[in-house]
Length: 217
Image 1 (cartoon, rainbow, N blue to C red):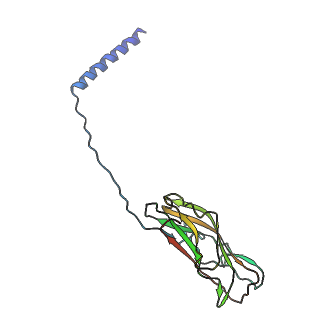
Image 2 (cartoon, rainbow, N blue to C red):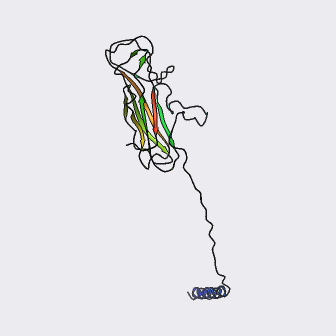
Image 3 (cartoon, one colour):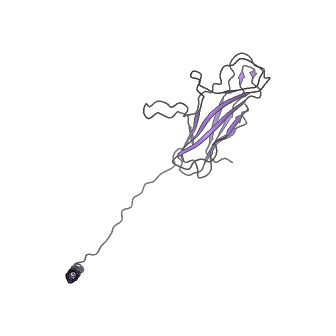
């Protein structure tokens, strides 16, 4: 017990001696700041990316991950019945899906919205599929580089061939939609009303997708 106390006292004396020596040769401590900065300016405004995603292993397009270039609703015998057709690949018969992708590099969180319209009714020359309805079923929303847009997921957007009848399909409110955003397009259907006169041949129509760089009103 006494031995332990002796060691403790010796340590205290040595520390005290070292402390005295340090004070005698103290050098003032100074610091000099180095400022670091990185600055960003606004990039491109919102724009639709039409291309499919690329497979990282093969570099090839991944079907169904971009905006579909064509919607094929099949070939059918003429009837007077009400019928519904789902868009599919003409060769493989696989159902057509897609993604509505938009990049917004402005960096100010202004918001944006996308409308879709059918420029006219399905037509084959002067013959039209009166009262036909094209429906787009949407899925999940993803985002990289910002907050997810809050408008567009899990809805059915119906188009009736009126170019003035634009429908909001995807939208980012203020504070949302910076970076890259995408909306899954899970299904495309065409409903043809009963009793509509049809003639032999192909009926065609066109969709337009319009981006506006302000939030939906």
